[in-house]
Image 1 (tube, rainbow, N blue to C red):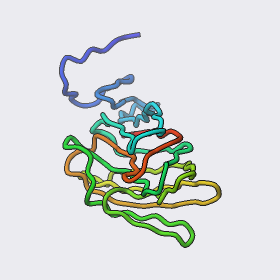
Image 2: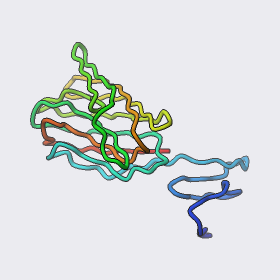
Image 3: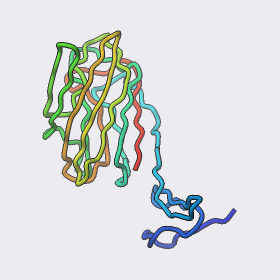
Image 4: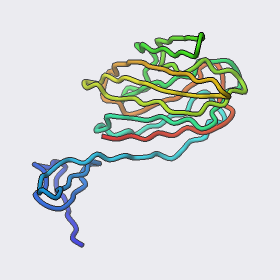
Length: 187
């Protein structure tokens, strides 16, 4: 096995043969000797949602184009909107969102985060939300969550001020009291 050592933080071109990981991106050569950048999927460590009003995921690389937020039995101690907020180097942004959810005849909307549901105590939420780059720091979301037979679908949009680097799942006027949250991200 050979080891490649890069002496610069700039990669000029893609490798002619073999595989290379550089700055979180994978490059490889297929059977036709075509060079291509390969997509990488990273799963973070799951975080407990058993206390506090928010769960944060920081250090998201600049090359990320798609983030999946996953919910496993997430519950709150009261009534509050369940939101995802996006952030950049300047911090979490809590304005400028356009988002909605629906469940049969129940609907809701928010401008302070990507709204997923109006949670009440004893609801256990399972499902995922996919957040995708539309380019130029513009992000769209779509999600499906379920709790005890009810399904909530959601969609939203947010333009971040700078490159996205963090995600917050929050219940601003309540607290988490059960479950866990995790993310996957990819280029």
